[in-house]
Image (cartoon, rainbow, N blue to C red; front, side, top):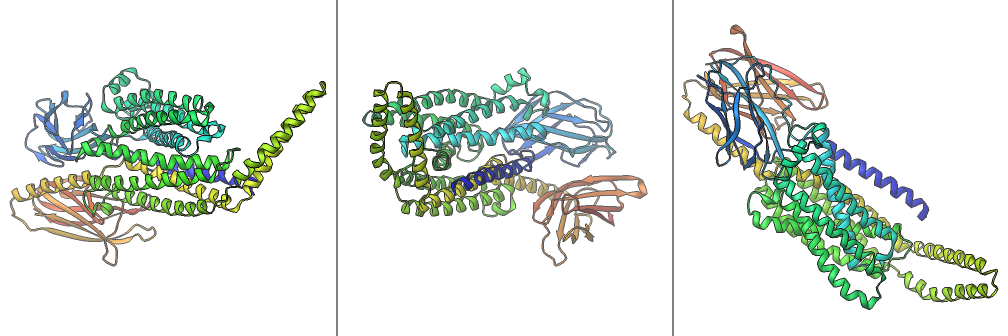
Length: 633
């Protein structure tokens, strides 16, 4: 039965890794962790004369480079001069050339947020009157492409290496000290160290291109690497490499001098290794906390140590689980039920710490209950919570198998000395024969191999041990998917930041609307659509308020045929005044909630019978455009 399980184990692990890779590849570019909350000139506005500078306001501090802010004329030529500069607070600007002609200008930005993630975007404003432009803003993303995928893969492997390294070493030192002399266990922990070290070096090389051009050719640019070393993220990666050197010393002692000591001599060394290993593990965890979400925002002084505890709890639980899986499946040396029970207790404590710190992190990153369902961060967090609950449920089953586990190893060990004496006797008689000593030694080795195989068959025949193997394997499978979701979650804009950015935009929109004269009434257009796909029918409603020349507030509502809100991925609006050959003026509204999209300060350059065309996309391939005319102004 064990022989049939091993291929299934390898197949399951490969399938889980493939699923995690799919999660990483479909995650897309890293979401902005600093959101654009305002600009001057504002998006879509038409100004009488060209401004002296363009300024952008973000939800938090960002890092600038020479090409972070660019302003392009209708032909795509850059019209900014000098380097971007900090205006004050979280507002940054760039000077423009004087005497700019009328037309539509495109502002692009690519900066690095305070939590080390790249942020990119673009918008347009017009001088005098809108015009056609050759600049496309649809591709303005950060952290995408091949470099973005490699960076995401490196992040995943760094987390995996950290978990295996810390959790595997803790399992050996705290639960199964005999495992220090087991080859598969040694290979597991050393493999975790090699994975984390390789992934850290990869992230360090990719960092400059990841937050900049995104070109593969820039990966080995020494100037970019020098700039990275001066950033917070670069310092964190270098610190991680230095701590990994200390971790290498810890591993050499754990699997070298420690394994060769007698039980009494191990006590003092165990204490020293536990203290040193905890310090190194906490330092490695801090290299994430000092450069990720915990380092910015609300209560950063509390959030960073909480994040360290959270990472250590995850590593102790999931890394120890991986070590237990290796001990059950790959190790020739039998693992005692007492060691499994000790790990069960350690895992329980880790889960308690994980839940406690996770509740605090969720409150800090979300800020409201609605963010669970209305932000991508909240939705991913719900998936993570579900996976943790599933993992705890499977772990409960494992605890039941552990309680019922028959410790056949003790009985086997009691019989072992007798077999060793028989082998020694055979070896001694062989030596007395002189010429037959080599043959006797060979027979002794064969007998020892047969005894080991017999012990393994006896151990595997225990139904409780077999049940424990299956439950631990299931735990490991869920843990692999959980790690992939967590990696994507760390690259997603926190719900609190997303909601704060929406509130800032709404406040700016309200201010603009209140200052506008109420000369005309609002215009509401209802249009039915059918994208042709599965469940592709619905009604889109477009509201313009106050429906006048100049700035307007636009709201788009998408509903199903039964009147319920329709959750679709994208809505675009285009305005055309055919009588004057103006347009189409493209408008990309922001998603406010399910089925609700909005754009503030939508500029209508002149009064007339405007054609309002709405493109509705219900899936990756299903979309349609519907239109209706409205008198505006």
